[in-house]
Image 1: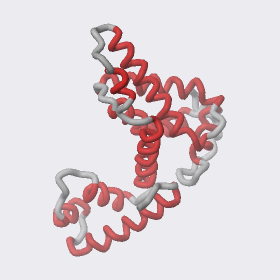
Image 2: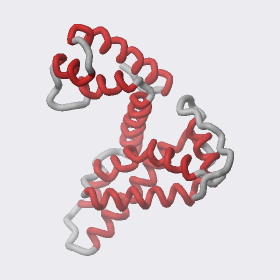
Image 3: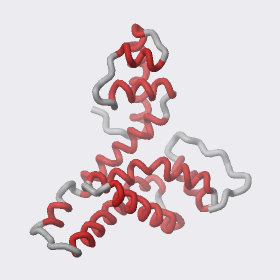
Image 4: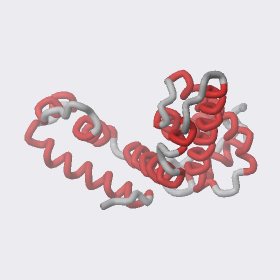
Length: 198
């Protein structure tokens, strides 16, 4: 795709972001296509990983889903349903790849049935979409808040406050206050994006 001259500036927030991206992609914007793939690459890649495929197979499935997206983009009627569409396409690719792999060797009884039962389509879609919303909400935080939340809640083992403070060049005593403020911002973003909060 070639970049469209005079491309409109894209807003990275709000429910119309995907619609804006898709519109710009259809006009030939490479930047919009790159942004769209960057936004959904973790979501797409997570599906084959969930089903136990290797990194190499998962990368192949990712590429195949991206090719389908490029082909089907002009016919996508509802941009807000893009995440669900990508999940379903990725899941179908996983199922057909598993069938192809098993046809070349002795198939164990109920192998495909066990694959299909790893997660019901609706359950898988709901979980993957919630994870995608969390990624989007995290991306809207300030860099300091994003790094702090990642270090405190997404890294194992959990880092002590002293180490987090040193990494972010903050006073150790301020971490608790900043943590509460960052979590409040994250909660607000999640609510705006429709995340199922307890």
